[in-house]
Length: 116
Image (cartoon, rainbow, N blue to C red):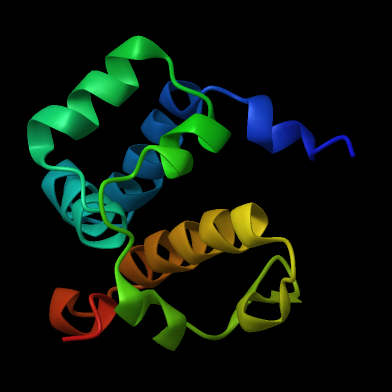
C-alpha cells in the first residue's frame, strides 16, 4: 500500500514552516521545540539531529523515543478533518502535531497545549 506523499517528505523541510507560523503569531521556536519534545520524546539534541539528517516524517515518528500517551487527548479539526477520526496511525501522528502547532499559533497557553 502506497503511503501519502507527506510520509516521504523531509521533516526538515516542514519544520521551518511550523516555526514561521508560530513566530508570525508572536510565539517562539523554543515553544515549537517543546511541543515536538513533548509529543515524540526526542530530547533537544535528538530533535536537532533528526532535522539535520533530513529524516522523513515516516522515519521521524517511527524513531520517536517515546510517543506521549497523553496525545490521545488531542481533539479537534485540522484542515476540516477531525484529528481523532484519522484511522491511519502515521497520519494521525502528523495531524496531532499540526493541531498542536495550530493551538500554539492561536495563542493557547503552553500548559494547555501540552495537556498539562
